[in-house]
Image 1: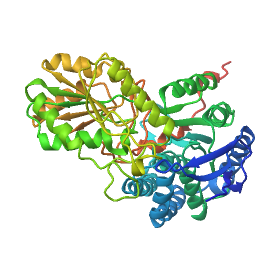
Image 2 (image 1 turned 45 degrees about the vertical axis):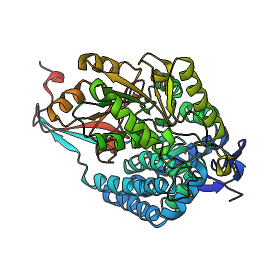
Image 3 (image 1 turned 180 degrees about the vertical axis):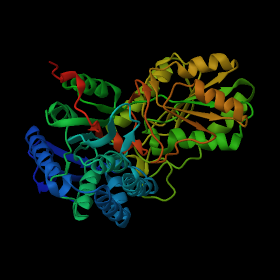
Length: 491
């Protein structure tokens, strides 16, 4: 894996942008070096995409015929699970068990969207006069999909599958930190027979490639997953273009443990919610509120179990916490823990990188639990994107709602209680896009996902996920026997 080409409008060619270096986060070894995309590559990809989606060979396909392409891609993904997982583990440092699951999720996304496409219906709307009215949906055009480094194959599928199902062409701007698995995704799509031009994979700098994609006049929608500040910039450009966007941004999700919670379920769910993926997840449950009466006992057990987590190489089946994506990101997380210490935090476990042996060259960081802070602390308000959890006690449930909602973010929340009435009441009062009750970090492609406040705009997934990449059109069929009366000329 020393030489790579980009998929530019369905054709494999050398990138014309700056050199990209993909390094293995576990060892620091270089996996691949190649030229990423440039503005010229973006322009070429968009032009080819526009031609491809307007070609009658694609444009005039019936929904079940487009669905057939999605099924073929799903099968290709399923047949390449191990290869995809291995590439993504080298790219991102994630555990093989997780990258296998992400590859399987991508295949499932294509299968679901294929099935949903075959069942989508236009509507004959109720008549309000001497005419028949219809509501139909049509493709938007060339879609720009900007995907993150923390779960590239799943995010690629989550954007590309519904966009293709809707009849569009798609240009994917993948992250320069993790370029390889998206290129493999492109290979699988092309080998499945997807018509040339409908898909491009352009890894590169967001400030160059992403910006060119967002500003391009022939890009008709942007679907972006990433940081909030970048999302704001995209929204400003989109406003000038009057272009719709879907923005899935950052999070600082609260998790709440009530006095009557199942302790074993709660502890396991909380650990998975914040320490899996080494905390590099927008929905990580990084703020933990525990009922005062059980706080000390609960936190003691949580810390004890966290200390037993296996921090290791991503290809070791025993590893639960793998390295972070880069050394620079690992150092950023470490800096945040230093900020927490300065704010008065007590480090209950972790708070450092492991030492010796396999840890010397990799971007490892220990699962960390902090106490002694209140919800106003920087550590509780800013997204760290690492394996760092802050624990806080609560007594008053009314005040708890205010604290849980006291964040610029509104992506997710976890509730742990046996009281279903309380769970329902709190789930409606929490201002987030997703609430998990007695579970955490579970996903379904059939269920819409997105955030509120600074966590984003719009929703992805679900049957309506295809409609999000389509324009709605109204059609009127005149049924009147006589001409419209307004223009009649009278003697």
